[in-house]
Image (cartoon, rainbow, N blue to C red; front, side, top):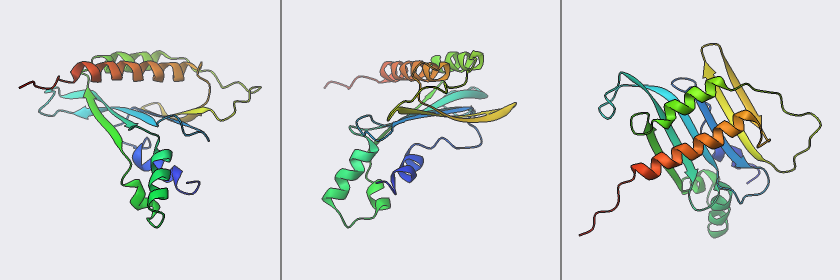
Length: 181
């Protein structure tokens, strides 16, 4: 896994897209594999038949399903030791969801909050062992920013955690209950 995890993470939770993405966020744990990987990408999209808006914000959310990518791949490797990492990666279960500002107004509200955040540099005199890693790719007219943070108290991390919570609320509220016959 040491040789294949980074590729799997980038393939399954891409955050380095260059166009149509305003902010991308991904979290994963260093060394310990008990936390499922998660990401969201918020970007401007052109009109489609669903929203009817000329340009709108949409969020694409991904989360490792039932166990972390690392644990899923290791379980498959133990079961099928002769399969290639690429073949094993194809069997990793990821929950995927797309929300638009029409069905989730929180997307627009959180995007507005992002633009108001004032960032501070990470502390130099702190050591965090095996942190939860919060990665961001922000693409804006005034510049691009790629940053990985380990501090849960950082304003950008707090915003991402709040945004994740809002997206989860929208997803829960937009799921139609099963039809009972």
